[in-house]
Image (cartoon, rainbow, N blue to C red; front, side, top):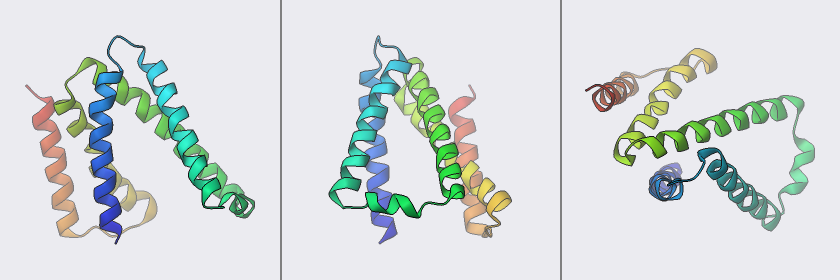
Length: 138
C-alpha cells in the first residue's frame, strides 16, 4: 500500500512544479514560498484537527520535536531554493535535478541510519546521479 501513497506524492509533486513555475513569474520567490507555506500549514493542521490527532502532540518527545524542527528547516530551505531555481530555469530541467535528493537520501540513510544498501538500490542511485549530470552539464 505504501507505493500508492508514493505515486500520489509523485503526482502532486509534479503538479506542484508546474503550478509553482506559473506562480513565481514576476514575484519574489521568498514571498511565493511564504504563501505556499501558509497553505501547507493550514492544510496540514486542518487534517490533524479533522482526524482528531492534535491530542497526540502530548506524546512527542524532545527528540521528536528537535528532529521535526530540523526537518522543517530543511524543508523551508529546500522550498526557497526550489522556487528560485524554477524562476530562473525550465521546469523540465529543475524538477529532475531536484530529484537528486532521492540519491542523496539513499546515501545519507546508509551513513546516518545504518540502512543496508542493495545492489538494485545502489544502481538506481547511480543512475539518478548520472541523469542529473546529463541535465546539468552542457
